[in-house]
Length: 527
Image: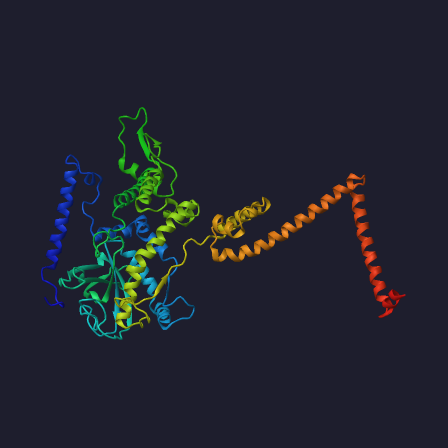
């Protein structure tokens, strides 16, 4: 089959696949409980397509939060991509920095990471200056292995991101001997072009068939497939649907019930009177929609109806709790930064642990490395000096620590450490546990950091012990003097006097030594 042309009936085949999936889901629902269809009764869609997911994402802010929360937190700070662990920048390091400055590669990877969770996958389209149509393979790329066949020299001209609803897979690789067997070969990309001179005009869609060598395929929550992941909204879609109904219903309820209605009733004795309905209608419209604050209704009395408004907060919070539990995010963190500040330390640690796991087990191996490797195969950047056994470039990806404490956390940690050290010294625990062991075992400080601290602490402890001994000796002397009848003040004076006598004797001896000339002392001794 010619790779530059699609089968004429590919749309019919895609329709049959979707119908088969819908029929299987319908059968499963019937087998679960043939007496009722909960999805039907609650108005939930029977089969959720990529377009339905995209519509929910576009129109429901809570759904957008479900899709974006992990990408936003994972890419809060860009990772460091370096060839070596040293401080010196290699040519590869500089090209990564320059490429990010020119084309914002980290920003596009974050955007692709986010929208790939709307449906089952997403793609990054890499525009090149090779002069070929998008449906043609990139020159110099081996279609069987996906690696460069030689030294290419293509430059990047643009980057674009698309979710599943905008990037349909229309053909798969059928070569069973290829390591890429079963992977997508041709995508149908939908470009949306908006009229710049009229913001209200609808976009005109154009479609292009694109070869896989020009795309980076992203799929986040993979289970049994390397192509299709579980959409991030799938497990909580019904709850998201309910929140949309609640928010819409609360607005309609307030619109209808918050403004008190008016009941026009016939006054006693006027039961048989003929009511001028048109005039009454005009009076009511003038009162409700205009500035007229009175009613002229002959034979009628107006009574205000009590408003019927109920807060949807409790019902909505129940749904938000269910959504947060489903996607594995603490509720306060899910609800935003202000609430996240009130989240418990344990919740924050658990959430940060999930972020680090996602960075190292998904973003680094399945997003960043395939993207960088494709740029190397294009020749857009030079490869590092070292490579793995399969020829892939060898470099390191270092993510910033997400557990960096805030100023408040640092103040609290410092206060607790100070209190612990005070007790450690005052109770003389250092006689049983050395400062180094205490820092490492009990305070959890890294050995490399704890060693110089322990050396300095031992010096301080020796000084502290010496001061304690001096103070004890002075107190003992004071106690001995007080036993012979002197008051503490007199004892202190006596002690000061004794010290002064010693000083005077030393001065006198020194003076005698100086006044004696050389040879005089020996003469006196002989005499």
